[in-house]
Length: 71
Image 1 (cartoon, helix red, strand yellow):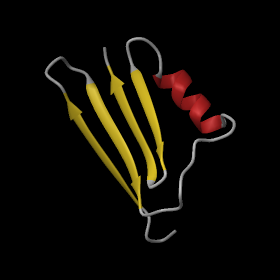
Image 2 (image 1 turned 90 degrees about the vertical axis):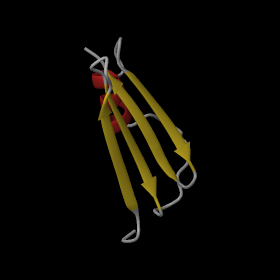
Image 3 (image 1 turned 30 degrees about the horizontal axis):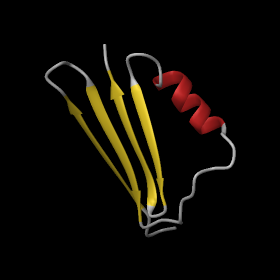
């Protein structure tokens, strides 16, 4: 949808960790997927390893993703 937007914010915390947030807005409705696709598989395998964290929220108004990368 041409009116859809993505907001990406990031900050480096005093402990050196990088916090990234991704929020989709004004696009098509979002629902939790019935199966896990390649994108989520890659995201979780590459980033969701100790001590990193990834959280996904399939809000109907748009996907929200939060990533914390630590040394």
